[in-house]
Image (tube, rainbow, N blue to C red; front, side, top):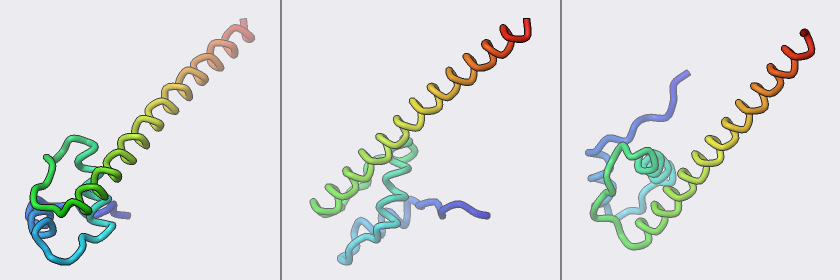
Length: 90
């Protein structure tokens, strides 16, 4: 099972200068890379494309933050459950 194709710098450059709209898939892949800090902000997008990309980056960062918080809560709950189980055995 393979993951989504990576966005190459060349494809972003070509997409940013295209007269046609950039696909939603490309925007999402670019947003994930931007949110992770793996690429810099692409140049040459239209104002509408930049707004769409910015909203997607914000969404990706929000999802990453929620997942981080959820994993910390789950780890805390698991640690507490292990502690209680250990105390119950004693």
